[in-house]
Image 1 (cartoon, rainbow over the protein chains, first blue to last red):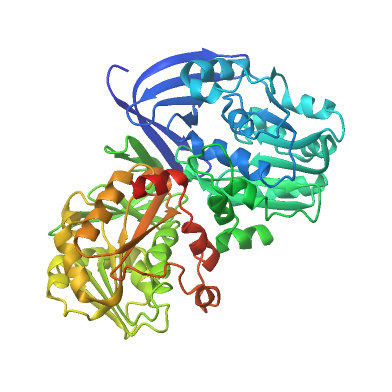
Image 2: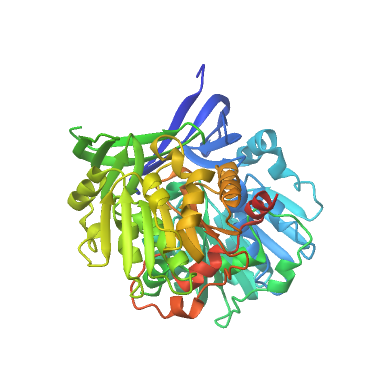
Length: 284
Length: 284
């Protein structure tokens, strides 16, 4: 690649495509699990691809990382112990650790090379990796959750790749049962839940699997994410408690002492207003 | 094109790209103004391109058309006379005419061929073209607004292509002055206002031009739009009245008697919560 060149990712299952104009490839590593590539782009900073799939760009990752962390952290009454499954780029970990009440945040990603590449090419996302409350593990997230002490965790955040391929095991009943057991009675599970336009069936199926695992109440929050299929993405929160107050700690969110680019208490409230076609599909 | 093939639109000014998997080209016409093409896609229905730019798909146009119409129609106290500049696919017209209080809706697009192609390939968008309240004109929108009787219009909706090319004249002070003069004292102007991520400078510049033309209060509403750059788009409303109550007729919106897929009173309220980075850029 000797000059600017467009790199397109064609999503077979949605029939749509996203691309960026790249200037050069910065690095490539074949880990025991996957191929990780980093490109430099003309307008989006650095771009990480895993097995050819766009994972994040310097410019637009804030939508995803903020929405994977803050809605759950401001919904749980007092989150102290957080586990992140996947999330090797450390962006979600950084957002979780912005909450002063968090005492320990464990990130368990199967692939250390993702973190090594993030340290080099997305150092801002790794800014909290040396926080004494951070624990970074490179291990199988399914096994980690299965072996986790029961009733020991306040929030589990599943920050995974798509449910096709290595992360498939992070979207089924067995895995969700492990999460359910590890969570305290008022615990919350958060899962990235794909496009609410193109992959609504997947969100429905995922919520059904969570329900079979014992989760009692659900909330799906949409948000923009330009580098993912359709540019519109979502996270889904699941609660052990059937009477979860999804109203969240709005005053705490409004009074937060840390900066965010996309998240705010009002944006959080706004995301709770599901468009009619999404609400109908998830209710059916 | 003998089999499925990806068609990518590369956006030079954002350094990003959107594409769809097409099965075949259905039609192409070179009008006196532009080249209009319609493709059939595997997952998005029919797709219209104008001069190579994706304009709409059967599957995702509801975001745009609903958000160009309903927020303004439910913000104005009693909209009776609506003018749409551009909007040749008739989708915005259809949404405007869902409001029973509207007595006349005039659509003025410079290119009749856009409407002819829409009638053939997006007939659902043209469902209200024979409504006795609809007036379809094929003429220069700039001249139409310049010649419009003063104080005669409740809402002007500028449903145009990008501000580069034929539609450039729909984004400047002179055009906005014509709109200002044509609007009644409580009138509203709505303009499609591009991506709130990649084109924030353009939104700022557009609001500044509207301000120079006499508009006193502004509101930019983001919404998803997969077929446009970044997948995240916006409309901007401008009011002649400095004390515009952007709170809108929430009860009327909640009690509306017509179906929508994306719009609801809660989604409208949610769109008013601008993400911090957008709010800061537009306030500066």
